[in-house]
Amino acid sequence: MQSIINQFPAVFRENIGLSFGLILLGILSAKLLLMLYSSLRAVFFEREQRRLSREHLKLQVKAAAAQLKQIEQSKSLWNGIRKFQIAKKVKECHDVYSFYLTPHDGKPLPAFKPGQYLTFQLDVPGRDKPVIRCYSLSDCHRKDFYRVTIKRAVPPSDQADAPTGIASSLFCDTLHEGHILNVKAPSGHFFLDLQKPTPVVLISGGVGITPMVSMANAILESGSKREIWFFFGARNGDEFILRDHLLKLASEHDNFHLHVCFSKPRETEQPGRDYHHAERVSVKLMKELLPSNNFEYYLCGPGAFMKSITDDLTSWGVPDSAVFFEAFGPATVKKAAPKLTATETESISKLQITFARSGKVSAWNPKHGSLLDLADELGVKIESGCRAGNCGSCLVAIKSGSIDYVSEHGASSEEGSCLTCICKPKSDLVLDA
Image (cartoon, rainbow, N blue to C red; front, side, top):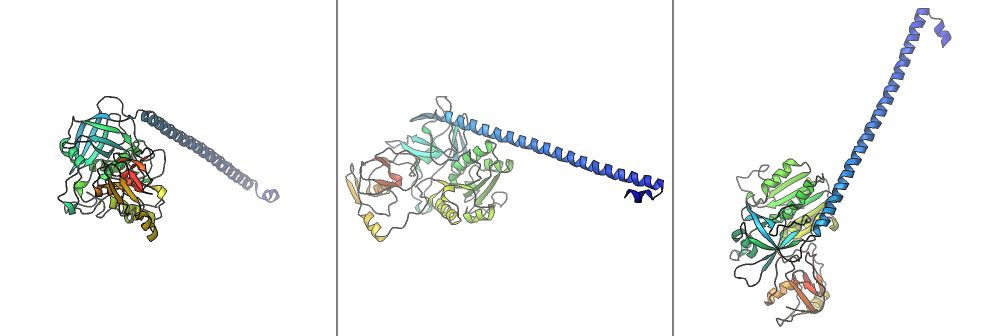
C-alpha cells in the first residue's frame, strides 16, 4: 500500500496522509464519545437503580411503620361498650347522613382496617331491650373521630305499609350533634390488606358504598399507586352517596377510576356530568372497561346485587380467592348451596329442631335460610341485629346437636353456641331459646 502511495506527488501524498490522520482522529473521537456515552449511561442507570431502591426501601419502611403503628393502636381496642359523642351530623343526600363520632373519654382512637364496622347498642324509645346494629366505617382511620354513613332503611316497593328501619330512623330523625352513643370497638373480617400491591375493583350498590370509600381513602392516603377501579350503582343522583368526595378523588388521582351507574337517571341528569353509565353495575360492564380480570374484587350491597355480581365473576373465571364481600341486611351467601338429592332432602327434613325455653318443636325444612328464620316463623323470640353474622346479638347456646355455618361471620361465637342468623342444623338440635 505504501509503495502505491509513494508513486503520487509529494503534495498529494501529504494530503492523503492528512486525510488518513483526520479519519483516524474521527474514529478515535467516535470511540471516545461512544465510551463516554456508555459510561454516562451506566452511571445514570446505576443512579436510577439506587434511587428506585431507596424509594422501594422507603415504601417498605413506611409500610412496616404503618403496620407496627396499627398493631400498637389495635392493642388499645376496648372491650365491651365505650361512649361516643356525635360531634357532627352531615346530610349526604336523600335519607343518608354521615355521623362523626368522637370518644367521650377523650382518649386516643385505635386504628382499624378499611372495610370494618362499628357495632352500636341503641336505646330505642318503646323497646325494653337495646337494639344492636352494625354500620361500616365510611372513612379510613382518623386521629380524632370515626365516621359512619347511614341510610334510612325504607320498606320494599311491594310492602309500602311496612315500617321503616328502627335503628336507621333513629339515627336519621332523632339523633343529633351532642347525643351520646354506646359503641363496640371496630371489628369484622371484611377488610382490605394495605400491604398488598394487587390492583383492586371496589363494587357497591346503594349504602354499600361506605366500606368501599374507606378502602379507597386508605389506599390513596398511603401514597400507594395501586390501581383502583370504583363501580357504584344507584337509581339516580338523589342516591349518589358521598358524591363530592368521590369526584374529588377521581380528579386528583390518576390511579382512581370512577364509574357511576344510574339505573333510572332523571331527565335533567346528563352522562359524563352527573354519572357515567345509564345501566346497572354489572360484570358485563367491567369486561368492557377493565384491561383483564386479574384484580382483587371487593363487593358490598343488597342481596340480589351481591348474588348477581359474584355469580358473574365466577363465570368470568375470577377465582373465589380473589373475591371478598360483605352483605348488609339479611345475610347473603356468596355461592349457591349445592343442590340436594331427593334422599338428602328427605334426610334433612327429618331433623328435629327444639327451642327448649319456648317449648316449640319443628321439623327442619331446607327452604329455611337459617335457624333464625325458623325461629321467626314459629314466633320464638331471638334478638337479632345485622342478620349477617356480624353483630353477635343472635347468639344462642346449643344444648345438644351440631350446626353448619352458611357464610363467614364477623362476630365471634363461643364454643357450644351459634349465630342463629347464618347457620343450619347438621343433626337434631336443641337450642336454649
